[in-house]
Image (cartoon, rainbow, N blue to C red):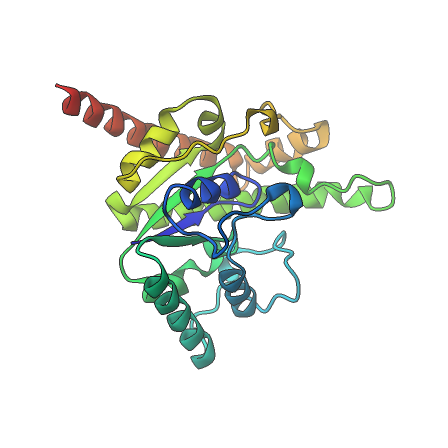
Length: 258
């Protein structure tokens, strides 16, 4: 079985990938990866395919939009993906991959992956705003635009993820990063989804409290609620989907213990 991890960059996708890898779902070919040394439990071959499809010259994905996905693959790209999937299938009974760019390229992967599961994770856009804002003085004038681009991407990516989830049905699970870090329910849901125990790889010391963002970010966020890229409307959609899944899991758990 193949598992695809989806989410906006810096939303917890690395943690999910690490959890899977150490629970029997092979995400990289090495035995382990070191986040503090730049590792992201992100298989470089899948990353390279996405960069090739999107014609990226470096790993920067800040300006990527869902509409940037080409309509079709080139012959070479299709052959590369088929060979990559076949190789991983031959190596591992259960495997997967994660790369935030896959939210954009997913329609092309979907046609070739055949049966697969999707694990998505979301986080309030304010939490990863510090990763995108310009901290120095030289380009601080660009921060309003950077905040706009960040929120727009957050909305577009999560809209695409929810659409994918609707099509995947029972083969889709949506996780909340804050709840994943603060309770065991999300781990239990992942274990149930995978049908196997999950190795707890969380590091509480790396979890920072939920941020509201700086004043500039909060201002841009408020204004964008009056545009098609409303973060509050998207957050509500995510929370409703997550709540429905959690309710179904609790109901299933109660039934199994009767």
